Length: 172
Image (cartoon, rainbow, N blue to C red; front, top):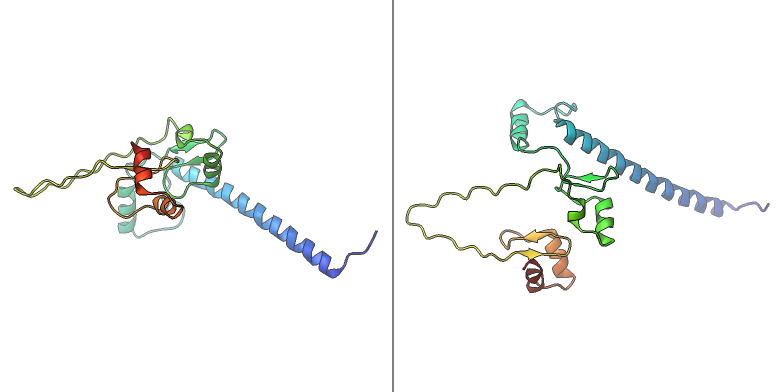
């Protein structure tokens, strides 16, 4: 058996370290997902987990989360879940890239779609605002009403060469 050089061994170490880092990242992703699922399932607060807030801050957080059911909105049936908020997890991105649709993963026990907030009352005699019914939609089901700042998915689609007209046609 030929003896390996120092440089060859260093390359092996680097390759193994990259493998170890990738595996650790995957394990961490799984652990974090399970922790988030348990937190959502049991409705745990930061204070209960030992990350105490001042009582005033805790009340604000609890009031914001009072309408949340804690059930995941999307699930693949293999234990992977996503609540529908924040960035999409890798398992969902991969499935969408493979041709699945977001509706394929919608959980029947997931939270009901959020109710629209009540529009503020207009002053007497003020003209009514007209809102366009235009909605922009992409292949993944992301939507934008046309009001407010453009979401990330829309900016990325526009940068990739799509036009607002093409995205408006998808929503029709």
